[in-house]
Image (cartoon, rainbow, N blue to C red; front, top):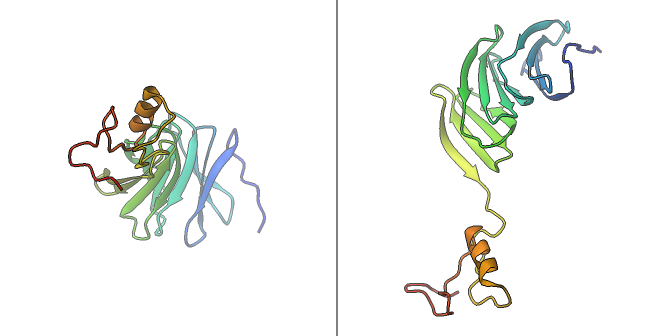
Length: 178
């Protein structure tokens, strides 16, 4: 089968296909999520709750739940096939570029420009865990580093570096030098 699904008025940024291959979801620059019958190419619903472009879409294994990630930092949950909004999840501080649903549809993962992956309980809409990778200087030991100014040292400390010495080079109380 070959078909072109027309309907979005701008670029499409993500698509998701249901496990059974019957339903297709697409999201893009026109700030919509569109649900399609994959075999006929017929548009089933256009979901328009997003304040910004839609960056990511995911369908649950049973095809009854859709998640969409938005440029405004929100994740939206939708009932399929009627497209009724179920919840708007907030917590990211930047665009949400990826969303994924667990096989049982109980857990949602979202990843964003803020450098976090958030895990959500779908039934309550609460964030149950936030995963964040280390910042560039996270846990970098700058104890004894020379050739940098006090301002550079302060900036590195603010970015997560550690210094086991005081400003004058003396060991801090309780600090273990490694």
